[in-house]
Length: 219
Image (cartoon, rainbow, N blue to C red; front, side, top):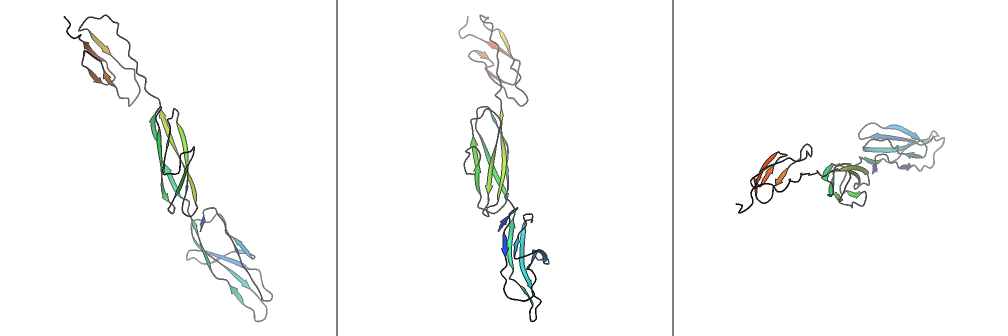
C-alpha cells in the first residue's frame, strides 16, 4: 500500500536463456490492458500515479534455440488517497478560550491527530485565553500512514466598551434622566440595570431610556 506521491521499487531476478533481451516491465490499472512502462531489472513506481489498484509484471524474452519468453508472477499494489480533513473556524470574545474540531471525510480509520502549539492528540483542541486572532494546524495520519494537514482559525472579537456619563448630582426627587449607550456595532446587545429607586429598573436596547429616580420615604 502506497500513499499519493510515494514510490516503491520492484526487482526481477532472471537466470538462464540465450540471446536474451532486457527485462521489460508492464503495468495496468484495474482491469485495463497492460502497458510497457520500463526496461531493466528494476522498476520504480512513479510518484504521480492516481489513487487506485495497479498490477505489475516483468517479461524476459530470449531468442536462442529452444528459448521462449517468460513472464513473472503478477504483483498488485494500491495507491491510497490522502486523508481529507477540515477544521471550521470559531469566534470568541477577547480573553476567552476557543475550541477547534477536525473532521475527516477520506482515508482509512483509525486516524491520529497532532495539533500545533501543544494542542494535543484528540479530534478537538482548546487554546486560550486569547487576545488576538490566531490560526492553528492539525496533522492527520490515517491507518495507511497517509498524511494531510488542516488549519482552523480562532477569531477574537474585541470586548464592547460601555460608557455612561455620570449624573450631575444633587438632583430633585422624581427628576427624569435619559440614558444612551455608546454604539458597540452591529449585533451588539444592550442590557440596562438602572439601580435602586429607578423606574423602570431595567431596559434593553441602545436607548435613549428615560428613567425616573425616587428616593424611598422621600417627602
